Length: 330
Image (cartoon, rainbow, N blue to C red; front, top):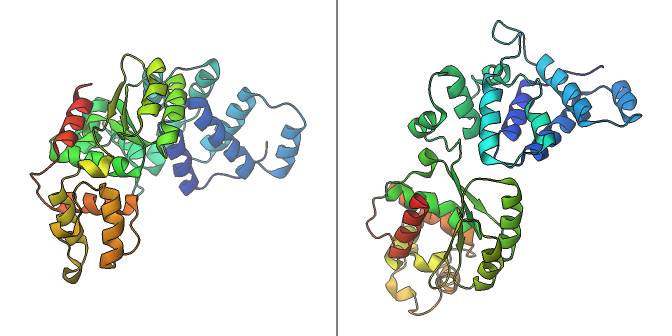
């Protein structure tokens, strides 16, 4: 088999994709086929395409190319299963594994040598940074490393939200309440809209064993009813009492966050908000009136997040406190 060696930056990309919270076969097959498509030389590709390629073929060929691309040194000449064993154990805890999943997880991929190889890289994603630290501190527990360095992985529970606002802000509010998602392994995932939540949850429970906390706006009663028949005992739904996430932010926090993010001549006050009007409607009108540009939910959430990160606050809304406590205790 003829192939080109994988450059270091692409080794890092492969490792990142292999160690995210995604179903095992889905991520391994994608990475391995990408390796074969990008680095297998044309004659070998032709030979491979003339026969039915099996999972074993994909694994063996991709592993050969991957392992050969890591410069040989005293720590990487033989397959060291330390990192692979960690990922296998975590996969068994996190996922419902199939026979194909185990085939991928038990390949002779030299993940430990690869982690050693990229350990000097700057700006590693959290899933790789924690593997570097685990490899360097082999006597330390994975949860201990996660808590010490706020690394998120290994993940212990998932929050499934409707959109980006909650995905951006929940961890920030949790920090203010003394519960750090990255230290405790709480993963927040946006479904991409109210109509996608039930579909996303159905798919997740086919693959994932981890407990799932589902956060819905008050108008998502129909989505809640779709989920309830399949809701696992370990999972929980919180339906916001009134409105959506923006409606449970305190008005004082919203005003201070907007004023913190814009120049002095664009400040707003309580008089710019209509009582009994949905907050998103108020914000659309306010942004247009004040010349802030078009109101966008995700950008507004980033404004709030920026304010929370740079200021002490004591006006976290009661329902936000309730949500964070439920996440902490479920």
